[in-house]
Image 1 (cartoon, rainbow, N blue to C red):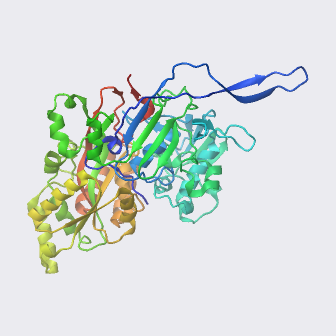
Image 2 (tube, helix red, strand yellow; image 1 turned 90 degrees about the vertical axis):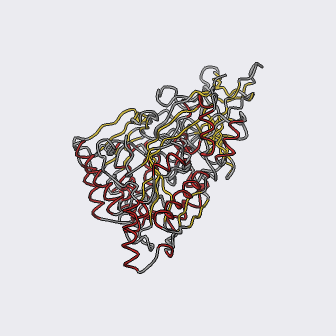
Image 3 (spheres, rainbow, N blue to C red; image 1 turned 180 degrees about the vertical axis):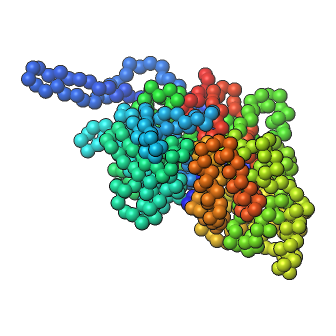
Amino acid sequence: MTHKTWMAVSLLVIVSLILAACQPQTIEKPVVQTVVVTAPPQVKTETKEVVVTATPKPADKVKVLRLNAGEGDIPTIDPALAVDVASVQIIDETTVGFVRQNETTGNIEKAMATSWNISPDGLVYTFHLRTDVPWVKYDAKTKQVVKIKDGDGKDRTVTAKDFEYGILRTLDKKTASEYAYVLTDVISNAAQFNSGEITDTAKVGVKAIDDATLRITFNEPVAYNLNIAGLWVAHAQPSWLIEEKKDRWTETGNQQSYGPFTLKEWIHDSSLTLVKNPFWPADIPNIPQSKIDEVTFAMLAATPAFSEFEAGNLDVAGIPLSDVDRVKADPKLSKQVENVPTMGTEFYTFNVKKAPLDDVRVRRALSYAIDRKSVIDNIVKGQGEPARWFCRPGVAACPTPDKYPNLGIKYDPAKAKSELDAYLKEKNLTADKLDLTLTYNTTEGNKKIAEAIVAMWKEVLGLNAKMTNMEWKTYLAQWTSDPNMQIMRGTWVQDYQDANNFDKVFSTGGAYADITRWSDPKYDEMCAKAAKEQDPARRIELYSQADQYLVVDQAVIAPLYWYSGLVIYQPYVKHTQSITGYDWFEKWDLAN
């Protein structure tokens, strides 16, 4: 199980409150050239790498984009272990899948695969891969990105075998990948291998035919198979390095990758820096060679980060809730703000095994008592849209408010009080005696939202709910392992543009299954039926029924709002606007 989560909550800033700064520098580098030394006849020609001192000339300015990954350390940059946006953002810039999602449209585009074939039954995908992408790393001694050599001294290029290894490692029970479920759901025999039922990897539906060809066999002929094949958990991974360095393979000086960027330095709890990969191919239009030389992620809270932006030290910032009105009213700053929609949902999730939340009436009461429009208008300052259900409108097969005006749960104090009163009468209790705690990961925005909603529960229901908070990395570990946590802040940003990627996360074995402690065969069947449905209109209807069951009939979660956010850029930042929750910085530039 796992959970794909959005680290920067409430401020609704794309890619976890990304903050950036351009600090042009000048550097001089030795030039590495390949010199062919031709010997006399009958003597073998020899190729050597030599360092040539370049003719002195004015050094080029290095473009450095400084961003903020949010408060707290980035949990991991291991593709098999990542579950949050901050981690996946780094992974998707340092490794690339068969296909990749366009950040502005959500459409799937070619990446490491130049083409693919699909069998007539829709189950077998054969990917044809590029053969010219080398594995690289940053060499701190030479201060350059270098190619990785194999045992024979040849360049290691990314092969189908590396992808096969990556997928199998993610699925291997010993890896303990929380996100393996997204592969076990769709790949033939992946679930049986992940559970240990089978140990022969040859039986899993992943096979490298040769260095440039990989075949994946799926369980069902569903539309999103291709999307899942492109996710970070299915990226190529360096077997030789992982076997040698074990869990330290992603650390500074060890990590090897092959995307448009590679890791330069990771100082835990402080910063992470990516450097441009000069060996990334120049002929992939949708993943170009980067114009940015370095990308540095700081780890700051929202308010100090925004202060740095206003001081001219950062390029891009999220706007803290306390500053939104001022920024909107400022004639200069307001022109630098963009409203960026993101395909994601903010919600509170309930532990259905922990009293009093083990009674659906209490869960429904808490959800009915939340005035979502008030949260949008007064707390997040218009950043978002009140959510009555989970599946984000705009994603394929998700219901929309115009077509489903009565779907989901709305603010209804009378219903909230009726639901709770029925429970209290049966248990011979009073509202003020109920022991409830809301837990959220530490950010200023999360705190303000929690305070507002706890106040609503007090006003409407007479509850004295408590609040507690944790640093992000601790929160991720705690909410799955602590059975006593009751109400938890939840977040979901799409992995791919399909309703299956939303509602499925609450089914048995899904992303939030061990957070809600909820398992319901009826809901599982609803999701499975919707996934297989071929008629688009019917598919939307089936997912609407699943959402109604999730948020009203069973009230497993209390949806809060669908994401959009205000992001402020310095005028010289040339960027693309992402709806996916991730930015592709190789498409960005910093004007002179």
